[in-house]
Image (cartoon, rainbow over all chains, first blue to last red; front, side):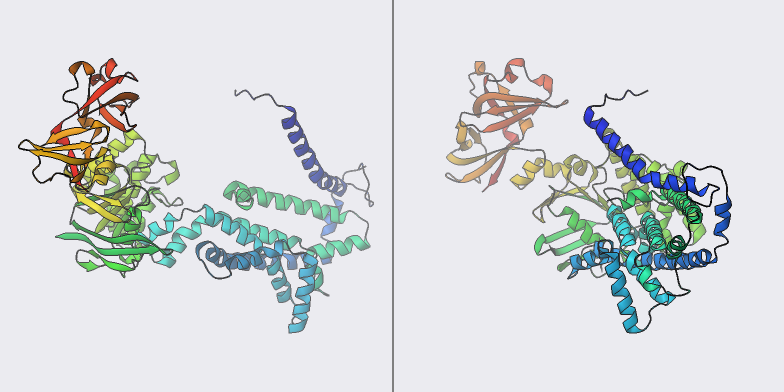
Length: 268
Length: 358
């Protein structure tokens, strides 16, 4: 048994604030989960009777199912394309000196800092101008603009952590530049690729403010349909859906963290 | 037959000249150490041979063939990095096999070859483990096997033993030397550790400021260096600027500051000529005033003693505040000889004085 040093007031205050923050963040999720299992049609607390019926009701709402499929397809394609593009971008940022490099880096990482509504308005004006507005492809491109910064960030972190001698070692043993990249560098970037892909997927899947400008009619995304449903109905089905969503995302993230340590790669 | 030739290599990096006309000729199977302080250009020389740096002028020739315009992967060079650079996602076996796979060797033949080299470095039993799970010494051996299995024309070692602890380093020094001789591969070792250079290499090249100052077999370089800075870098030296003050049939008298005076049998020095006198700490011994100090070359007071295990170093300060070092085994000094503040004289073995013209 190791004995812990006694805690002073500062340590206690810090851990107290940390716990409060955690409660603050998790309480709404907890509340949503509790409400979703309540039998009543109205959102009420404390719950009176336990029921799965709102979970079963998700399947009855056709718009949610359809828009979730669109959201998954958009998020998957945006994440895949952006992660691929991010490999090239982060390699050039980390390895080469070229004119306008810092500007380029700032630009590629800027969607994170730009107000999303502004990005959304800019995108829809652009798509209307070139005549491709309200198509699946323009929605995809809009989401790519939204998420490209995340895989670039995680890949830059992976590249910085990677030992630069590894690639030279591969070259000295007769590997061509491409072979060395494929067999040595890319496997080293795996945590960055996976966390970049996951972040891109989740950010795209979850996005409302940019999508809202780019969708119309049958082309809608899951967050927009959920929001529409809440605007018109009072029952706890969205709470059930949200709870399910939180559980699935938590499982994916914790698996990825356990397997690839993705969180440590994205916090820098 | 020459294994490797460097011909007037000049390298500029970021507008700064790093290598100034480096010339080096190494026989096939020979092992040469590039020794020098950090920033002297030894690693740049190594990277130029490996092909990671393209020299602005000069040529690299291996067995007579010019390498200078070949990319690293077309040069047949085995490289052991300071941090070993083992591929962390591959097993020991896959690491060693990598070079053969890139050269599209026959698969059954390469499995045999990898097995043979892993046995040679006594690592056959860990062939399926990942590098992270190995000890420092084992990683070093994997890196060595990986560099050697491709049968390189040149083996390049960058500070190969720098990351190992003292005991392991001594053991690996012996193993490395045996392996190098057994395979007869032309080898260059880059190191800042003079002991490593002197014990591993057939010849040692001392580099200063981007050029090779002096090259020679270890014993010759240590005992009879041609340059005072080489002598100072290798093993350290007391240096004193002197002037030839008299000449007689017994030789010439050299006089310097702090009352230093010595008569030495040299006919090539003329009166009034200035020279640099260098004496290694192990060639200075301490004499007590009870002996009249008649044979002493200079006097001073004991300033400090530094105990180093097999050696003890005594720092002596002269009247004009110059510090001299004398060293010997700890029990060769008496208590009075190392007591701080004691006035003592320094005696030198004349055969071991090195004189450099300035």
